[in-house]
Image 1 (tube, rainbow, N blue to C red):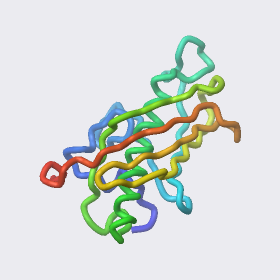
Image 2: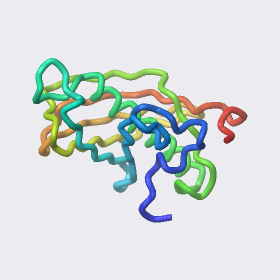
Image 3: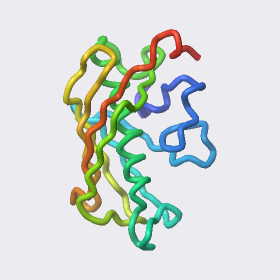
Image 4: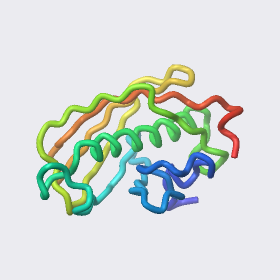
Length: 157
């Protein structure tokens, strides 16, 4: 189904995440899709997501954006590795084993951000990804995430 995002294919019981859960009424509802071999997410944070300065994004939100986008990209990458695209079968869910974020410069609120993730390694149920978060074409944060697939028996709806 064209026009759908990775997170649209998560099982309902794994769709309540604050960052990416489509069923979380108060969540950020981030959406990720393929752009070639990279997962891309565009998100515009509002004023409620500021940190210590009213014009800049709270660091925890930056970490959440990188974390949730990497989880979605890991799930889609595992589908690709297995010969499927998102939506062709139940999307398996990944959780964070490790997340490292480097904050390079302040990230503004009120403008569209672009988060990109690339798979560095797939090893069984573990996927390592690198990510960048950019505002106005300038990278403001970068990260590395290790995502682990939830065991099959727990991945059912």
